[in-house]
Length: 619
Image 1 (spheres, rainbow, N blue to C red):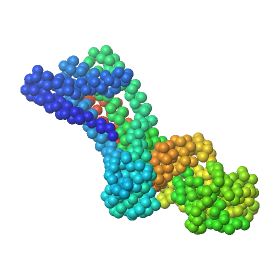
Image 2 (image 1 turned 135 degrees about the horizontal axis):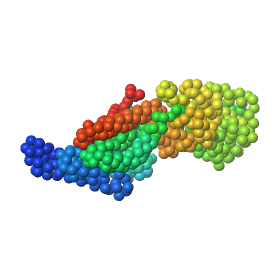
Image 3 (image 1 turned 30 degrees about the vertical axis):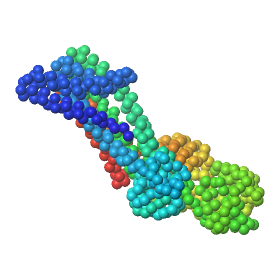
Image 4 (image 1 turned 90 degrees about the vertical axis):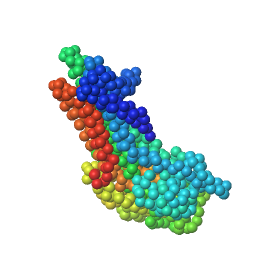
């Protein structure tokens, strides 16, 4: 992370302050004007020359910035003999830069503390021996050994052992979680007690922790619309102030007045009003299990009128279980065998639930199909040794010319009304059964929706599931509007309709099929656990732990950041107006103007730093 505080700045500042104090003492107390002025000019040179260098470097790129205003004012003051004012203005400006850099570094401390959690060593089994390696040298074929007190250096599955693991760096939750064989663990997590062997599945820059760090670093460079506007405004405002100072001098012949105008008009507090609040918000989020990808993300989620949710894996756990099996003319084992074969290559939660149920009930392995075709939003077709097998919804059956009789339709409706997803299984043109799956709602989902609604958000569900199942889930969670049986492209169209009807929309999803809708929304949140790759890449805010209850925290934090930015801007603009009036009425001198400028910058930073202490209780 970039350090905003040059090592030599503190030394230069200390020397300049000492020279200024001694110079003023010689001038005012002893009357030694020549020596005093020489010391003041030296203090001015030590602090003003670096300012001038920065100003002229910016001019090479046709940028007129704050440094140029100060440079003109300081050297102008020396020219007209106001040596003490020149020294004080230059020293105060440098002091302000120093304190600003220190404060910003402190504001970034929440992010830096996360960076410091990166594991620095891995103990790996190789050729029957345990060797110590840098985490970057671990390969996907390695088994890593982690003992109590050590950091896990890879993402992977526990192959043996048992331990309590603190996953706060990834999930934001400091309460240790028990991990045993078959569980998944993340790099940077700390084993608080126990011992694990982990099969490396993601290493180096591909681990969840490394990706989070990369996204946080990138997020700090992504500017909010307010910040872009203010920077553009400053690019016109600063030259305008120079022109105004020239005009005032031409009409009044008062050089001191013109130079004072340059000092008090510095828009320093205004320029940092947005970025410092954004950095503090990102830091707070990182510390609490939220990955916020930039200022525009914060502004958009805070301004959203609608929060739209995918159902499976977002509002529900995404780990559906088979709850009932209905057969028509075949045995249950045969039905499950054919359905599991069709879903053999499936990664969809519904398909995985069928395979898991089959292996659990029959204690048999699944036979691979000869050929499969995944039909997004419909189901799956598979060629097997026993013929063509279809597993999916009504639309798949209709598209494949498979007829549903009334008893089957009545059974489907009953299951769906109970909140279950009923998957029809057909062999050739004949329906041979229905497998019903239930996916419980996530813990905390109902409370989270209640909190969102209390903040004025309309809650919408966009799902590919059937209408009755969607209605049952919506009733459980008290959702305002539901749109069911949607293909991924349909979700994009509904996002556009919601935007036209209500305004800005935040979309919350967890998987590949949600990526188009996440991209189409004004703000997007990836809420899946285990880091669903595509959703993480396209989303503006990521909940790495998959804890959906953190969404209300993300909203509250975003709104707090926006309020903080507005407060900073109102304060900065108001102060400049007051100082302008003070200068034009000759009630503010140059050095006092610079002092107020420095204090205003520090007040803006202090106000932004309050965001680091934001908690749920502040919401």
